[in-house]
Length: 119
Image (cartoon, rainbow, N blue to C red; front, side, top):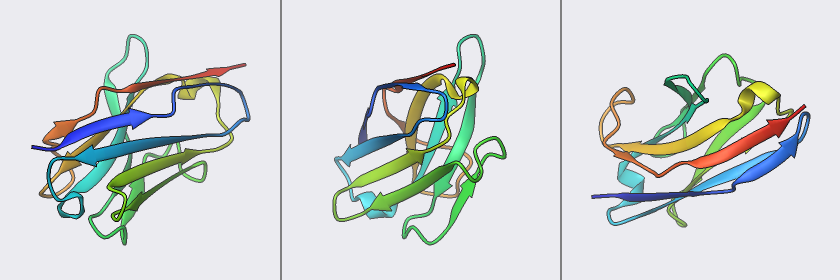
C-alpha cells in the first residue's frame, strides 16, 4: 500500500503560479511511476502529467505543455507539479497517483487538492 497526500491548496489569479506537492508513504517511493490528474466541476478526471520512477521520463497533456512541470525527489518521497501562467480553465481538483507498472492504470490515489484560478 502507498498513501498519497497532496498539498498546495491555492487560489491564484490568472497568470500566477502555484506548486503542488504529493508526499508518499508506506512503500518504496522510487518503485512507482507517478502521475498528476485533475477534475474540473462537472467533468471527468483527466491526465495532466507523468514522471517515471527515476524522473528521467516525463509527459504532459497538451493543455499544460510549456506551463506545468512535474518533478520528483525520491529522497523526500515527494512528487511536485509546478504550474505557471495559470488560466481559469486550470481550475480543478488535482490528484496525484502512483503505479508500479506502466503509466495507464494507477493503483493508488491521493485525496485531491483544490486549485482555483480567478480571472
